[in-house]
Structures are given as C-alpha cells and as structure tokens.
Image 1 (cartoon, rainbow, N blue to C red):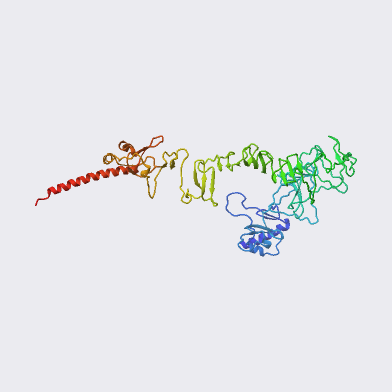
Image 2: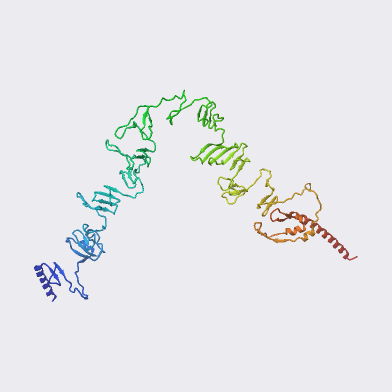
Length: 611
C-alpha cells in the first residue's frame, strides 16, 4: 500500500509544481515556493512536527566541495575536524549556511545599517580605502565626534574641537593639563629631542635635549610683533611688564642703539663717544657728549656714576710707598705700603692685618643679609677675644679668651683657666663631655658632678692620682664626702656596703691629750641588748643585720653614739670603738675567771685526803 501512495504523491507533486511552481505540505494552497504547514497547528498532541535539516559533523562539512551558496546544514558535533578553511566559523553545534566562501553561523551576526540605526563594534575594524575617498558631509555643530569631547567637528561653523564639542575657533583645544606652558599640546621632532609645548599660559621648549633655542621668526622681511591684549606691554623675565618692553635682567646689544623717533621714523644712534642722557619721565633719552674727563694722576675728581674696571687678563697694580698709600672711606680700608700692612677700621695698622681699636664683632666667616647669623671673631669691652656662632648684633659670644689667659665657654667673664657655663638639663653630664672616638664610653661633666656616658652599658669611672700622689675628695663648704649620699654629714658618708682590705684608725699618743683609763667594761656590755633587724629603706640594704639600738647604747655608753647634723638627727654607733669597751670587759672577765680559778684550786687542796 505504501509503495502505491508514494508514487502517486510524487506524481501529484510534480503536477502541482508544473502547474503552480509552488509546493505545499499539508496545504493545497502554498503561499511560497515551499510552504510547510503543521499538521496540527494547535492543541496538545505530542506528535513531532517541523523540518529536519541535513545533519553532519564538522569534519564531514569541512570535507564538502562544490557547495552552493545559501546551503543550510546542522552541525551536530565538533569533536572532529578543525576550525579552519571553510569551517573557520564552526566553533559550536548549531545551524550554519554557506556564503560562497565559508560556513557562517546562522543568527551570529545581525547587520546594522548605521545610516538608520546605532550599533556597537564587536572587534577592531579597518577601512581600506585604496584610492577611494571617504567624506562626511554634515551640517550640525557636533557633526562628527570621537569619545564625546575628545574630538569634535563643527560642520555648521567649519571648526574642529579637541577636548570640547563647541569650538570657538577653527581649531579649539581644551585640556586640563597641569603644565601651564606646555600641558595642552606639543609638537616634537621625530627623534623627540626637541619640540614646542603649548599651555594655558604660553609656549615652552620641550623634549629630551637639555639646551635648545625657542625661535619666533617672521617670514622674509616681515616684522615680529609681541603684544599683550590688555596693555600692549611685553615682559622678558617678568610676568608684569611695566613698559612696552620690560627686561628683568641683562640686555645685550650687538649693533647700534637708536633712541627717540616715533612709530614711523627711526631714532638716533648718536655719534662715537656720546653717552645716553635721561630726559626725564615720558621722554626719550638723548645722546650727549660727556664733559672732559679728570686725570686722577694730577687732579682729584668725583665719580658721577658707578664705574667698573674690566681687567680681563690684565693686572692692576698700585706701587705706593706711603703709610696710607691706598684707602677707602678713611679708616674703612687702608693699605700701609711703607710697612706692608693692611688696616680695616684704622689708617695706622700695627700688624699685617689690623682690624682697628674698636670692640664688637670684627671678622665674619659667615653672615646673612639680616645680620643675625654671624659666625666669626670679635673683641668685647673687657678686652677678651670673642668667638661668635649664629649671633645677632646683641648676642653674647659663645666663647671668650680674656687677657689673663682664661677661656670662657658660655660666659664672657671667665674666672678660671677654663670656665664653662651651661644651661644643660643633665645635672651630671650637661655641661661638657669627653668621649672615645668609637663613642662607646666617655665622661660627662655637669653642674652636680661627673658621670660615665656613651653606648657601653657597663664601664668604669676612674679617678686616679698620678704616681704616689694622694686622691683628695672635699667639698668647699664642709669638707664632707658622700658616696650614695647627697648631703653627707660626716667627712665620709657611705650609703651602702664598704669593702676594704684593712681599716685603721690613727691612734698615735703624740696626737692625744687628756688621757685617762676607760671606765666602761663588763657591766655596760651586759646591759646592752643585741638584735637582728632589717632597714626600712631598702636602698641602705635588703639583707638581715645584727647589731645594737643606738638609743640604748647612748643610754649606757654615750661616747659610742654620734648624732648626725641632718633633719632627723640620725644616731649612729661607733662599732670600731666598741672594741675598746669589749677589751675592757674581757679583761674584767679574765680577772673574775682567774680569781674563781684560784678559789677552785684552794678548794681542791682542802679536799685532798691527808696522808
């Protein structure tokens, strides 16, 4: 049955095609060359409908030859073949059509007509013009632009804007460049060594070449005109020119100098030997012949202006023999050619260089314009040589050397060979310091004493008398010396332990008087209480001690107790002299023991059996 229907269908289709040149599937009235109508256009039937396009993998499609343009195919696999040749665009499963050269992805690109629609470039594009022109014939203000204000063509007014969409000139450049003389535009030679930069305040040379000319050159015989809009003044070296030409600096003229004239006539160059003479405010100077010069070799004269002797390689010598052979302003400067001396502040120098008899600052090694950073030498009223650093006219010198040879630092009236006065805040090191070259250790001197200084954490402080000489410590007021004690009340007061090889007390009879036997002995010793204790002030000692109570000793043997001359009237016990009392007590005890021994011996004799 199927074999019969198919030929009939083919025959019918052929007839229909011959008659109508159109084919319809599921329709007897095709509306196009091929019109396929769904069998069930609506409803919920599950029967598949549609057109199945030929299916092949990328390798099969890539291998086809003689393919006609507009051929449509469905690529069902890209696991084989390569994305090259006619398959250069086949990078995914989908529908592709042949455009006569390569297979294109169906629906990949939608061509936008820029004449009727806006569009977005998907990649870099190049217009190859060859010998063809490309013209834009707009009439709008911003007819053609790139990136907003980056570039704009005003076709309505024939202007181009860079940095603006509303140019006011044929070329209008607007830039936020921070370089005032070169930040808007630049014109460089191809090697970038030099060029011109334009900014919002002017024109400036730019490029890698350090020194190059900036030329303003009128063409041919044309004149070069420089003029500001407001005043017409031109400034060289000044931003605020006060006249038509204001040169703030030197001026070199290598040809004639014309003065006078007006806007249309030349001025006068004068004649040889003439000098310019001012005609006053608002008038041009004039050339004038100077008065006859004065010969200084036979006449005195007066300068009528500043003069300069240009010596070049030539020497200028004065060969006088007088005492004041050459002078400036009297005593300001004087050359004594008779004695080969120079005086500053005197016309009768007594040394090779004599700064005169006045006191004050005399010789500056450095000073500033304000005269408050003077470094140099001087002489103060006391006759001392003064050394100044960073001083004003009223500042005392840092150091003086007086007529007695006393050197003062920080004082202008030293009373010793070296007298140092300082406001240093370190009481033991703030006045002077003496350090080894590596700065690890040294000695500092302050207004309260001497102290070790430097980077070395632990170092000795040595006070060493020379040879067999003695080391003496004494304060001027009391003669007392304190170790660890700020206010010693004895000749030597030590706050802490004393370690010594030996300890002696002078006891020569030739130094004593009023000698009597000691009466303190065993009785007084037996009345003393011995104790264990610790000091309340741990700086004295943290260790447990044994000893006496000074008040108790004083009640029994007052000579062994000393009262200090301090606020507390501190009591101390002379443990050294305590040995005298202990010696007396031992002697008394020995007498008792000896007497008892004698009694014991007598009793033993009595107890012996009689023969």
